[in-house]
Length: 293
Ligand SMILES: NC(=O)c1ccc[n+]([C@@H]2O[C@H](COP(=O)([O-])OP(=O)(O)OC[C@H]3O[C@@H](n4cnc5c(N)ncnc54)[C@H](OP(=O)(O)O)[C@@H]3O)[C@@H](O)[C@H]2O)c1
Image (cartoon, rainbow, N blue to C red):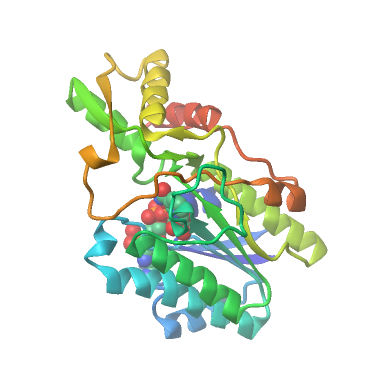
């Protein structure tokens, strides 16, 4: 089966291309090779590649920048997804799409299920939610995998930021009142390939929205503590910086972030057997990978 991966230069897109099982013939296109906001480009690429499946890892992911660059965020996260959906509908093929915990308001105190009401607090979350809806409206066969707090050896993320700042400063302040599930790009790519494999074998996909994020949930502060604990034990930092827990109010950002980003992933597990990954184990793999570079 031929698979088109969009956004192949990003954290998840890179791992999707790298981890593609041998049963699939994969064409990973980065933003320079295929701009999903251009319907003509999308239709030409799909007509030329003739994929049996599209995995969309392309997105506008700059959460704060989106507040002042809303037009572009909506163009990529809503219109780009609609373009892929239109092209997929033409070939009658499914789309595997990635979305985010930021579609929720974050004012809950139990894990969000797929049927809970959404209520994004910023442009990024609102545009990603609109992308989910555009896909559902245009495509009868699609799966949206909502994930959270993505990290990996490739691309920009919280783990790499912490390691860089830890080398530059003696102390760091990290937000401790936002809770979520850190999820490695490798785990997301592996889950998507399992779903693609289900589709290849059965010609059927679980349909609709599914949650997939790392376990156990934690705060950004606890995530940072674990990053430095593991980095120190692997000899990657000379000395851990002093970490202080601060509140969201102490660290104002252009986009308001959900305080509670924890998602219930049991629907995906029931439908596919895919279990939430342990982010601490995945973090170790990422740190080891980074130390090789
Ligand atoms: N990062 C997170 O913490 C996080 C959390 C929850 C959900 N997600 C979701 O997970 C998915 C993958 O995110 P990620 O972390 O891999 O993001 P990423 O590293 O920012 O990758 C996104 C990729 O999309 C590309 N892109 C942007 N605009 C495009 C366009 N018009 N056409 C084609 N490609 C375009 C970007 O290319 P350029 O760099 O060249 O613009 C980038 O390579 C996204 O759907 C994201 O919303 C991410």
